[in-house]
Length: 401
Image 1 (cartoon, helix red, strand yellow):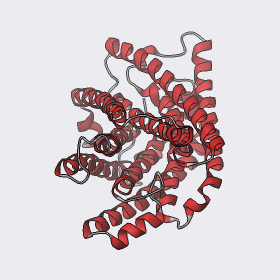
Image 2 (cartoon, helix red, strand yellow):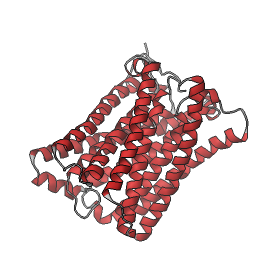
Image 3 (cartoon, rainbow, N blue to C red):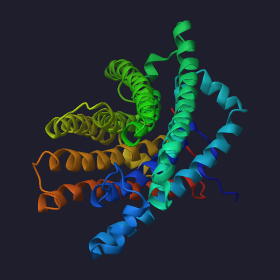
Image 4 (cartoon, helix red, strand yellow):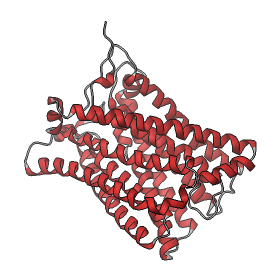
């Protein structure tokens, strides 16, 4: 009997497999970001990491090795699934299923593609910092190319958003409000936010005033676009969910607000750093701590909401631990990754810098352990989902909502 994989029944949501792996590479980079000294630079680079590895304790050396292996493995998976998705999406565009998708609410699932592209650019930049000797000496020359890449990705995302909004807003009755009973329509906001955070990186790292200025303005444009789109999609979806209940297969999208908060939060931190260093605009450590605390509060609230609904609709039993498969299951990876990353920023850029907690104290490691627990849980989930969707078997995928 011929075997098949659920992933053989393609959906653009499979780009989230690439996004999740890319996000996990960032969780490993957090070890280096906050535990390795990098004087004179906003991020650690190869030379800083090697110095820490050579002179550090056994604990530091172990953490660095784990980070190296984790980043390498996750960037590999990120690029592997990105390439697979780009090939599969290219073939998918020639099918009748694609035409049907373009004329349904699910047209916005295509935005998972620019989201994955932006995540991969971010992931490769992390890998470059960690593994490429001497990169920092030429990094100023790379920033314009990086911003050009994010601009291209942002324009691609806006073109797909324009196709969708142009269709549904110019013709009455083509958008099925009864099927808007999830946060699936917030995917375009996610793609714009990922573009924005990448665009903001030069603001935090460059010493060139023009580069920093372009980075600040460009990231602000895509960041504001993300916030506006997210607000509209969230409120209209909540209204539909109150009327029709939450669509079972799309239930993981209820937690899409969690990665959105992390991505936009990092964008604002990068912008603040750029304005502080380049334009002498100062903010206090306590203000940063409260800003991050507010973002985490939003994440926890939407996380609790998502867990309640996922449990009530039986999502875990069906799609994670059961025999049914849905490409949307990969949306479960992003919230855990996002919580892990933002907790690290809240701890190190908030609590420690504000003087609430001493670095490397007992409470420091307790909070770090919570962040690492989220990270490890998401690694287990990725392994499980990859086996479900890309392993050979007799099951077939449930069509995407």
